[in-house]
Length: 481
Image (tube, rainbow, N blue to C red; front, top):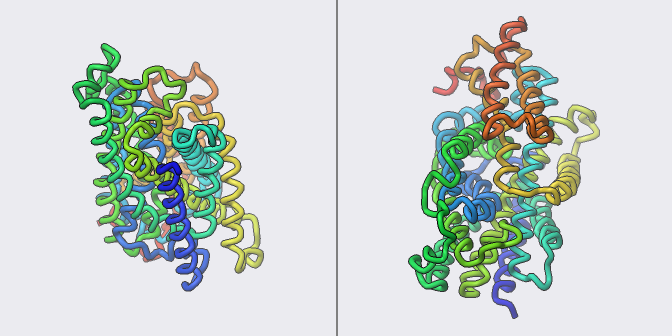
């Protein structure tokens, strides 16, 4: 029997067992909805770090980076390095504040400060971001399964199999399942990456032979020129932007045991994240030397993994698949939290939800899963698709930072118009090529969102309310001390 398939099946069973165990933990605790969506706000630092690292080191940061490195070389690894650096920055400056806020979602925070309209449009924007990123986990999972069993899986059936597993984990186990499984996944992914790199070098005659086979003139081992300074700067800007305000990331801080745990977990998680991108970029470079002209560049890393020692290759591919799945679990649960807290609860009376919040959450997971699968069928370049969607969060980050550091400039109207501007910019960039006057959408998002913020600050008169956090600490710069 195929060794790689056996390893993959065993790994899937381990994840299923973790999900079942997490479900029992939740059933034994009080406050079912809080346990299901936020692990009862009891995550220790090691699980916070694993949750952050597992969210980052998924399909985009492995298969996607290798896909980019297949053309751009080692510099593609800056995508993940930017992720890790941003996680550390948030850990130092914002994780404690997010945990102390006592909110469940970023749109809830926007609503408390900027009003109901800001909360509603914020929920739509956040859901759009999460759905785009989730859809790309199907793409990465499909690439991995197609490489393992090309006679059994097509690209689309591989995506379906991936979806069935990660939807099942989220549906059954909730947030604890995502956190605990990511501890296993992060360990396996790094062991698999290092072992696979060593095996690949041996399989193809060492680095000198690999280098000799690379197409001439490519920026294979240049740290900057392949991606270019503008793109690397864009990745850094996008990652710093999204780490402050994407629901799936902030939700990790919301679920931490306390402020200190949130801070420590984010810093540790950022450190864990940073090396993965450059290591996976090496796979793209090796694939460019050994398998030029692949029909789908996303197949670069999975194709390479099938050429090495079956046990090492199976462990590596299983780790990639599991990391991809756990990333999707966090994203799906983030989507479920958004819809339940910011949309469903705004429409249905409290009595209709009593005792049924988990049922509604699971229904949202199924609906979002179907929507993201169809979106995945249109995904082309993984990194480009993700970073353009993530740029929407410039509005949220701007609103949070200005409220923290320059509250005197904030007005009630800032929220709705700034978030709406970010959505309009994304729509124009996506569907109107003539609008793409900068190298990356982030270079439009920040100045235009800032312009919307300043205009509303000048024209609007209603100040922000003296809103208090759950702990009684105001949303102000002083509260971050």
